[in-house]
Image 1: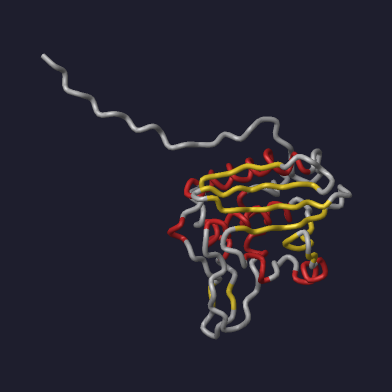
Image 2: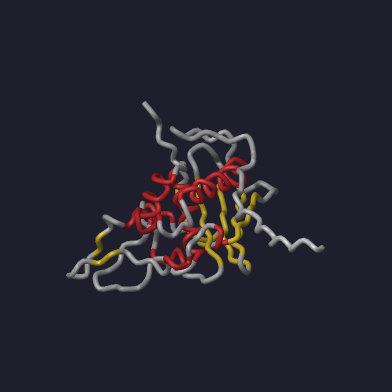
Length: 216
């Protein structure tokens, strides 16, 4: 029996679809409007798939009961900010709580995390356009003729947000090595294995310079 990787593209996309908040009937606002929203939702989906439990969005205000009641959906205020999203998690395999921030810095998006009581911040950054296809934004859950949600195509719509499936794998690997393995080493989860080396970041091939004509 082949175990499903909780950080594999299909599993993460499904968790992303499950996490998007439910709309009230007739609500036509966008679900994801920026690359920051996309990356933050991606990070949250990966954390949930590894057994992390959401406690709230900032260190000063826990809303654990609301998060538990709505799970796997996120509370609607999860992406209220235009430049920074935060998540607070707990995990049964640790006594710590984990604080994550996903911030927009120009063309970059930085993901950083800290376990309470720890002194070292784990972080990485990406260039948003290398992973997210801005032409697929904004993204909206499909509505039926009577205004109710139809989520049957949502995972596929979320997939179109990414440049390619390989980029989904790259981002999962980067998150695992740069953040998760540092916050909670030796995490035990069916289908999950730790990586030993840094993920390979694929880059566009260098452009060839035109040949100059030979001089006599």
